[in-house]
Image 1: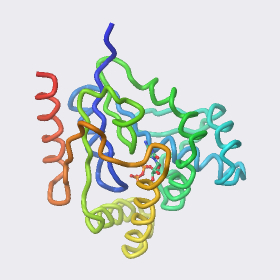
Image 2: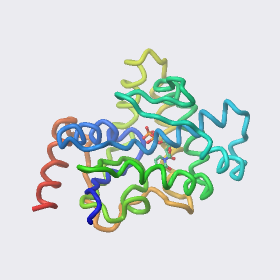
Image 3: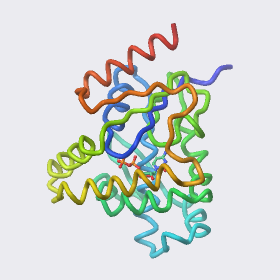
Image 4: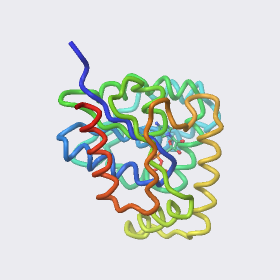
Length: 220
Ligand code: CDP
């Protein structure tokens, strides 16, 4: 029996891949995996438990003990709604720092695979196409200039009532890009066979439509 199809959408921070991926999933009636949220959950839980970000062994052990659930767009950790708590820049930076460890990445492997259910899955992250779902029917690398991404992130945070400075955000995302791209384990890259979608000048709707068109061609 063949496995349900996967659309993998990878890309750098604040490229809009989360929004695009969840809308594509909605349009197709597919499940949605926000893999970055998992790294953010590990960041939050480890900070709460006082586990140092460089203690990769402890982090690896911590992952299977986390009680994670996704319900109607909300994210729960050990029964607590942490939807907003995991979105701060601090947690993003911490997530990126602990995502370099193979212990953390392999501990999250099965959990990510468990999202692959009928009728299909749209998964977004950094290594969806290269490592987690190399057999994805469509692989998209969604990107935009650093300036366009910093502005996106700024608007997102302000809309949530979280204060932010554009200059700091630009610096944070450049730091995160560098670390995500240069790490030895599952670096951020354009996977073999991936289509690059440069979205700096596209609306979300245009980006969603492009991915849906590519998917139709891929399964035709
Ligand atoms: O929202 P943003 O794009 O900034 O980040 P995210 O997708 O929520 O992911 C947070 C961090 O987790 C990233 O900076 C990556 O370092 C890491 N991550 C990863 O290593 N692999 C993934 N598949 C997803 C996220």
